[in-house]
Length: 414
Image (tube, rainbow, N blue to C red; front, side, top):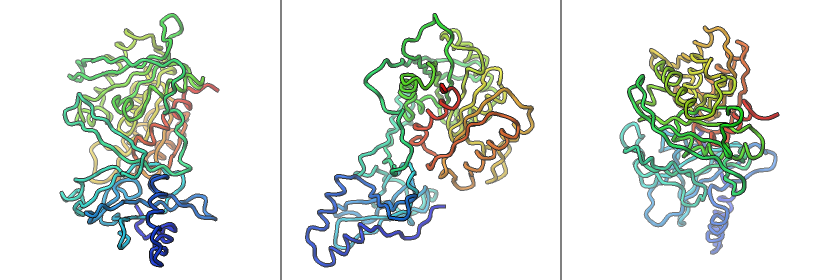
């Protein structure tokens, strides 16, 4: 639950005192500082190196009636609790939170919007990125999806958030290539895009390459720069070169069906997709050299694919896997169906990388709890499990940095 108690920014308090004694330059000096540093304003205090006071700001142009923070520490409900305060007789609006120093997330702002909750049909029509924050996370429009649109978030990144070294493109060094295909499935009776990444200097003369299979392929290209991450890891000698297959979803409804422990989807993977991959690319058929992975429902699907097809997939990489998911659910009670299947099954030749964000719990969905439960069950069954937690939300702004961690854990060179 997000705390809503009032936090006091020392810098705002100092500004307020200066204005009260008639300092004519105090406000302009403040805005000059903010324009140089960007928002949000981050203030630390002696004696507490784990937390910071983080102040979100808005500069009024004379028409602002309310400003609401949406996402990040404000969460995704109760907008009335996350309004900024207007400093009287100024163009400054602000709200301060006390946050851990390693937090990373995204947020947007909403001005002059209704303060009725989204679920009641009111709030949520005016989301914009923070104009004072230069750090942006952009979800681009997928031109093949009619309902797709570009969405821009502002990034909240505190000083101790894990460095995302591997997502930065380098101008030096050879780069892999992305090949786009379309594949028709008789089993699923649908068609989808398939992207295949081949490493730099790809050749069919040497030993077959390791294979990485990722669900939600568009997200693993647009939101998580997988080709760049692979180029960087291979260039630095951290992992061996590998071929990566990124599988698209025809639409959202299909995704929600196929990635939630759907046996026909596993049949498609083993009987249609993998034979096609082996026909067109020089990849290993050894399950110990094959990783299946994904995020959210994709992480759930990866675990299910490992459970049902261990002779094909020997490694599971689940980023914020939705292991809470239920079959034949009771209202608002997570059944953790996939965990029950691993409890009931004999140990399989599988290895796992699991991770979850400590701020991912939402409503009745306890992402942290179900991931810890999955970890504990797998370890008790004798599986090799690499497990990690990060201080963040259910968003790819964190996953784009930690994908490399999963690859290093499963196939990194020692």
